[in-house]
Amino acid sequence: MFFKDAGELKQVLGGFFEKATLDKEFAKNFARSKILIRFNYSEPELSITLDMTDGENIFITYNDREKKPEVDMDMKADTAHKFWLGKLNLTMAITRKLMVVKGSVPRVLSFIPVLQPTYQMYRDYLKEIGREDLIEVD
Image 1 (cartoon, one colour):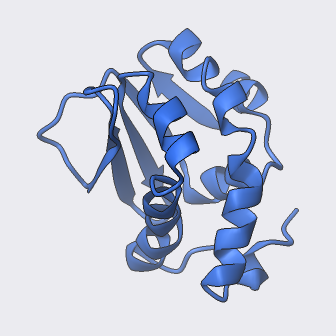
Image 2 (spheres, rainbow, N blue to C red):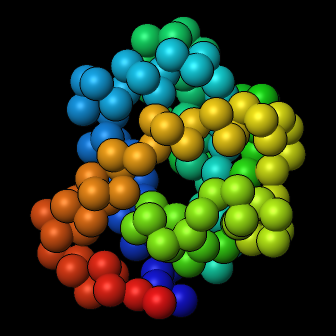
């Protein structure tokens, strides 16, 4: 496991999402989807909800069970980490059930072009927070 507990996972993946929302171009492209998506991570347990329903902003909440997402994505935290590093193909991960999508799979797959620049953003973020140890993984 790359993350020892939910706090560390929130710091790394949650912090990355929060940082990515500050990139105006990325945020604009991603928010245009007008989707409410929840990522449910296991090992350790944490959920991160991205609410882009207004089409302009990305609102992030943690362990939020109040909002009803259009798409729920279940995966191990290590799977998510490998994905954001660009080491795991989204379509293959869904096909192999490493990521389980509840909701519209085509909507999830439509994000692929928007996500390309985030792989380098994630690596840069890991360096920024002093977690280079998380970059070189198999």
